[in-house]
Image 1: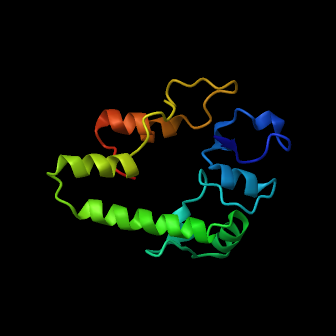
Image 2: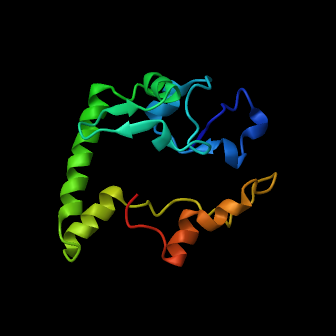
Length: 151
């Protein structure tokens, strides 16, 4: 979990839902205090970026190009890793849905984690700034049976 706008810049937004995002260590350390990084809570990444079968990230917009450059998303190690994931995903997805062992492996690699926060249960100091988002949250979609097996 990270703050999209750094706490040093906006300490009052430390517990603001709209300022909290999931970020890997690499992205967290390279984003710095700049605002050229796309905010995944406000913009669909698919409008700006596309993952190629070779693992490279292709920019679809100017913002996408800046995002790729700042976060170094096409670093060779990252593209190799993504290419392997794409191959594994395609192989597992092609297997019969009746093969429980392969479905479990597909779920392990590409399923939703079980430890995502239950947004309906959280009580931030300033209240929930996105109450309408609860209905579309991981927990609610899983409870309703509308959450896909993989993302």
